[in-house]
Image (cartoon, rainbow, N blue to C red):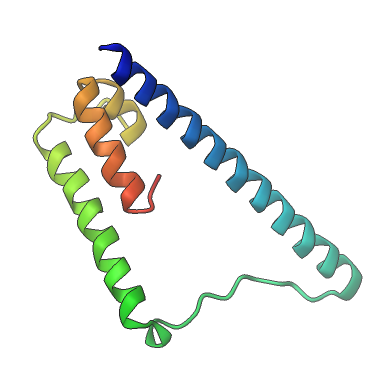
Length: 114
């Protein structure tokens, strides 16, 4: 791996770690709000998902783009043997060559799954 690729990998790793930290902090804050409201009022807040019937063309196009990236990741993975002894994607992907791992990870990120 040359220096530019190493720098790119480091930036990507740092970005993923930062996003994971933000997501965790957000989840913890949301759980705290739900807990406080429930303790004080007895009302349980649950995040309501908007109806798919309220989706706009832009939202549907974005969903299509994300789905295409998810399928692209799966197509890459289909080219590799996934042993029965390996239970999760995280375990499986560690066994793949770095360029394959990066391609799969990039598609999963674009799909909103990572």
